[in-house]
Image (cartoon, rainbow, N blue to C red; front, side, top):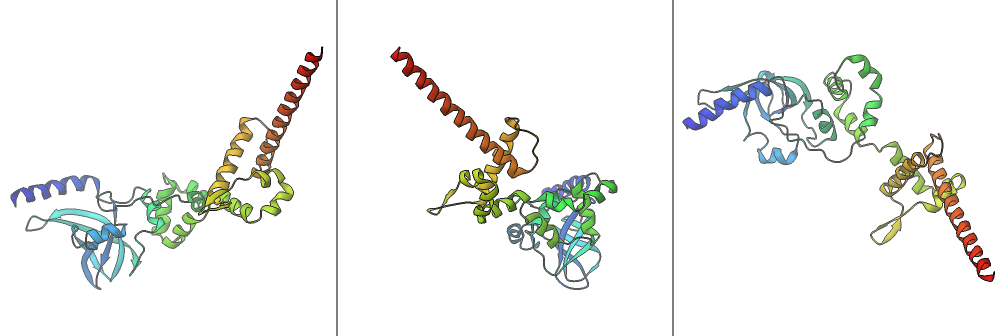
Length: 274
């Protein structure tokens, strides 16, 4: 017991140095209560900690109604029995239900505003961060915030954008993915202006069927875009025009190679005759 108390006292010292002022997700199980339960931004971890029951004992500085809160860590201390307690300040009410695995939490975590001790956030795939940030670029540049993530966090805390809006923006496809999907669905239409692209666009085998896929088309467009610059083909800025120019370049190269080979064969025949 004494060893455990010493360990808890050491935790108070260490956590107070790194986690005070950071944000944490908490849940009030009933109205008019100061007893809160820590929730991880991860449903699996919340199950493991029995929805906060097996996590650090947490108290609010003010009475809360039932639901989820983003709280700011105010203090770590030991109770009369020597157990670690956490004191928090509720800063934002999130409602009675939330999606702990929402993409928005992944992005907001990059702001550095959240505690490292109790969050358990993991990136869950690629996100369209550009899509989220493009609408806030001008305001961010005028704001003085050190990072876009910290600025978006402040906008979220100020109720100017919701978790759902952040997640929707992050999960939206990139422009090049949208273009790839449109090409795949309307290849005949694109063949009118980009015949070489329509002819050369690769397909993938999916469950025994050879089809166009978003990933394959995106890779192809990106590779050809890089080739345009590698071969110094001009200053075109429109992606599909660049791709078509690269394909025409290779048509011309292969045609020249064939003509050269044909000429060499012809020269050899003449040489033999002479």
